[in-house]
Image 1 (cartoon, rainbow, N blue to C red):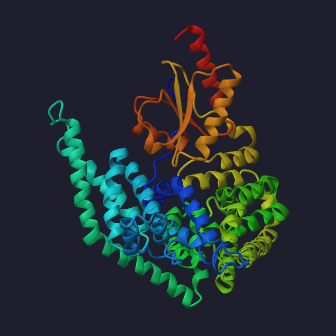
Image 2 (image 1 turned 60 degrees about the vertical axis):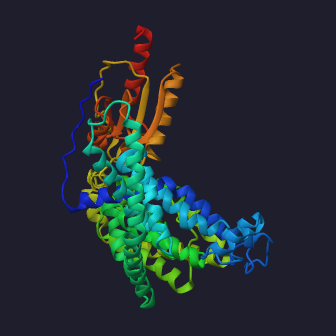
Image 3 (image 1 turned 30 degrees about the horizontal axis):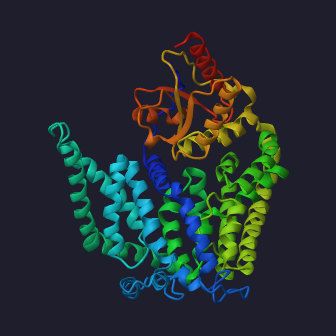
Length: 541
């Protein structure tokens, strides 16, 4: 299959660098969100202030709680001396009473998962192994959960491993490859673990203390809402993954480990500002923006897909001020009334927010709900004023402006999105639905891989759509899967990506055939792929 795609201009500069950095951070955090959620549920159920804790707001108490959280109720400390004594005496029950679940998960499991994923993104499985070994040294050399350390040491260790392997690439005698590879990785992992213990760990302690101090300073001076001045525009312009996953999530996890919840999880994830913006467009917008806003509001609020409101803000840049005001109002509400989440709400859906807030009691949940409502109302009112003030001018100029805003959002994001593409289709009609790829079969297709940045979400939905189309056509022996672009291994016969990601996919899988699409959910190229596979089956290729 050969492809011809509408080439997107290559972008350079600070914005693209921030986008790539944020994407890389997301690649380490997002695949491990399930582990964060599991830890969050264990914490909110069994720490002293949780459902079954000694200080439960509901008055419940389950006897084995002390064993689950460790150390008789101190979720922040692992009493190793007592645990080792119990183990030596064969007292398994006492051992787990000291060790528990909460502290080991946040101290070891979560940082090691992040480090392993970061290593894999840089240098595959081998990089992931060395990254995990090296990060263990950082963890043991500190006394706080080392999320920032894992996010730095993991990729760094994998990169060093990659450079080391280049030194003797092609120089190892046949039969000694496994010996050299295993011992070199083991020795390097040992060196990096020791270095992490004595040098990198203390350095990360200092960085964590500085970041935590900055957040504490903002809280003490009642200035935390001002963070929205950075966060809300960043969401619209480049999705602020670097801020959210690089700073808020690690610091929030540390706070949640100590107090059971953190306000930092709600600074970016609060769905209120986006909901308020979309409701304002529903009532006071014009043209395609007005018509599509109600559906977008449902997706944003309940599905947690915040990116769907970015084009609306870009079509009327003044509304970013409304988002800032709404975000700051929500943060202020949580800061003043003590609201917070027990673990990251990913995606930022009201459902995920509810699950992460309820563990700290009904009172906390009501505060969080109040912060969402206030953020939505403030954003709605300011946006309504802005839209009403320019309504006559917008009615005269309305046409391709909303479609241009969608295109600008995707350009800012650095990749295509099925949700934004659906908005573009409603804004510009079938004119924007023209295929971006014309395909001609030249080789048998047995393995099809949908690839996107994280290997989740949009690519998974695209794979499901094509899999169903193939099934309806009676084709059941073709594998259709999804993966992150960084994990492409060159074994796919056909790789399907969104247009602006195709060049990266070709670099990771140069021998595969590539198809570019605008919209993973209803791309016209899928029919071409199905027809080509059917023709191959019929011709016996």
